Length: 253
Ligand code: SAH
Image 1 (spheres, helix red, strand yellow):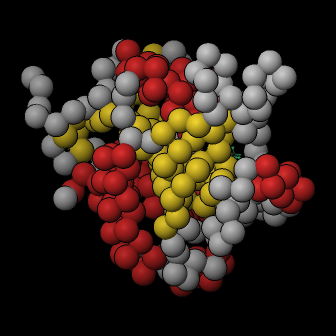
Image 2 (image 1 turned 60 degrees about the vertical axis):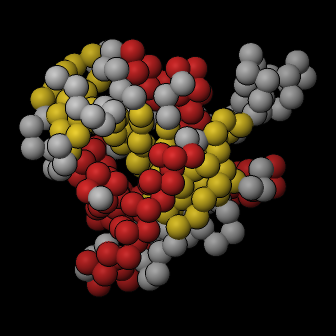
């Protein structure tokens, strides 16, 4: 039986993030397709399909296609972590994507740098309405959650007063973990708020099928020489809680 609201895909990039979403689903059951575990069930009474995207653009594009073609989702919400690039985008902040770009796309000189061949453009848009709804959810989470994290975690990651940023999210098949590369990306793409490995692939597939997409990323590192150090601990102690709280706020209203 169809409910009034559309079926929503909730996509996470890593296990800890997905776990916090599954904890909100009372009735999920697993379907294995293409080596991926899709969790079909409900969240606050709405039909959802939760899944790990897999890491990188190809894994992400396959997952997005399966969600749309096989599971019939009508909107996609992606929650994950990313490296901060924009000035003032700090660990613990949240970045909401309004646009997407593949920073490693380069078919020049046949096509302009970053243009996706066949699409005539370098940037894909997030869905305005769904992203506005996610913005409200992020604001609610930021008002509430940091105060509930324990003091040691807040101190370890310098999480005082996390902020919400919006704008360009860039994706590529690289974990950006040197200051040199991070600075090169900032020079080349001055508007970029954060870098990760899946968002722009989801955006291209969503564009192909006309399915609304919104992506939120918690900043786990600054994509610099220190990026690898605190990444696992941040995921365990902070990012998974952010993901769960944002999704909870999105569905609860
Ligand atoms: N060792 C990790 C894998 C990390 S890959 C593991 O536990 O499996 C990094 C993931 O986080 C990707 O999904 C990517 O989207 C995101 N990410 C976070 N920081 C990033 C950065 N600095 N550069 C690129 N991707 C980043």
